[in-house]
Each structure stands twice: as C-alpha cells, then as structure tokens.
Image (cartoon, rainbow, N blue to C red):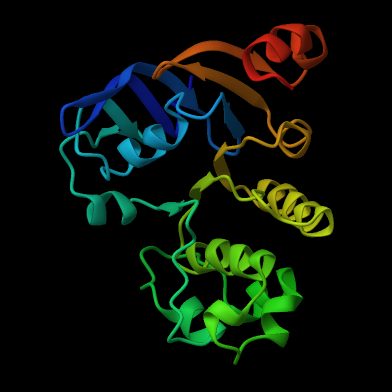
Length: 234
C-alpha cells in the first residue's frame, strides 16, 4: 500500500503560551482533495500553518512522502513541493499582477508556465500590467493561487479561497480546483463556504477545539448532513 503524500499525527501547536492544536490526525493521498471544516477558531488555519512550520512552535509528526518535517525549516518544506495560499493573499501593491506572479522562485520541476496560467485564468492575462492591489478581490485570489502553481508545488494548502467573493468568481475557483485535481494535484482546503467545498472534496475532516473529531467521504456526505449542521450550522 502506497504511503500517504501527507501524514499528520498527534500534531500539537502553540502561538506563544496559547495551545491551539491538541493532537491533529489525518492523512491525504496523492491526487486527493481534502477539506478541513469547522467553526472559526477550530484550528483549521493553524493546522495549515503548522504543516508549513509557520506556527509559533509545534510537535508531533508531519510526514511528506514519508519524510518527517516537524523540525524542518519552512523554506525547506516549500522545496518539497508544497504551496501555501494564506487567507490574506499577500499581493504586493507596488508590483504589477505579472510581477507578483513571477516573484516566487521555481522550487521544483513541473510548475505551470505563464502561458498555462493565463489559459486557466484569462482575467490575469488581461490585468497583467495592472497594479496588484488594483485587481478585484477575485482576481487577487486567482493571482495568489496562480503564484504557487508556477513554483512547481504539487501539494496545495488553500485557506478560505472563496471567502468574500462574488458567486461567479467562486464558481471559477471551483472549476480551477476540479481542473487541478484532474491534472494530479493534491489539495488540502480550509473552507467556511460549505456549498463551495461540498462537491469538490474526496474527504472531509471536521475540526473542533484543535483536533479532528469527524472524518467522512464524499459518498457519506448525504448521511452526515445532520451531523454537519450540528457542528457547523450549515
């Protein structure tokens, strides 16, 4: 049996004195889309940050392709082919859209070319020379995702990419996730928008109080809706 691409075991995390992750356990197989669900403060974003080594301190186990990374520096984790798209997007206002796109280095082979990215995101091609922060919220979100696709990352950690965006843009992002999945990308999403996340994920993890308390597959989703309504209010 093939080892998971990402395996998280008993992951503990702190911001200073604040203990926010209390033993997170889950795995992600290559080519899967997995969504972390939960109320605000459940520990979903902190889990993504801890995987990348961006939390105050962490312990436990985070294996990428079987290699332990719990004591590995963030830049070395990124070089293992992991791309993190934070909720705040991080678009540089002093750079054009295309300059923002070209800013990160290529970390591994097989990244998308600028032409491939523009084919996936025609809006970005049209706005290539616009100042980064003059893009709409949806265009900034597309740019934030596109930027990590160019680096060669094949495991994508996407934090609330649909938040605050118009339905037409959310639909485009859903099409993007489906397209990336078909191309063999592995995706871990944190999402508050259950309507967006529900049709996209192979498996769902429900988090509460800094740990995973429920796990179920896409096929099990209809039978779990009452439970989800209880935990998420969806």
